[in-house]
Image (cartoon, rainbow, N blue to C red):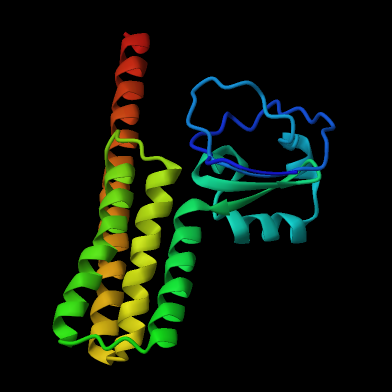
Length: 210
């Protein structure tokens, strides 16, 4: 039996329990908070005690540690779960389907500048969703991650299909700039946080000495 769902959140990885279940494949994204423990979830100990190769394979597919598997799409086979990064799965799907459709039907994208502008708009949906999640209390969902990722995949398909080096470089620069900006802001926030903690410790130490 094959069941398909969408997974929205995932509980903390600590304390997972594995219970045998029937052989099913589940593609899930579940948005309910405080949901019951899933029977097919792996034990945290199993994840940490597995070989480096298996851990590397998991990270290659999920792009997240077990504690952040809520950002992943889960495929469960024979009671064992595989996790795929929700946003990247959407990007690869949009890129693949976009290129397949464009080449199969030999679609003419004219004028090129207009289609490049459309691709930029589509691509920025992912950038805005990702940056707002990283830099604000806003929480996104796997449905949004996957759908915006799919639109970015279509944008990449358009840019590759245009085969214009300038457009490719502009798209690469935009993605690199967004990642760099988020990194700089997060580093500044982290530095300010550590500075506040250090000041509190110094103040507490002075009060103790007094």
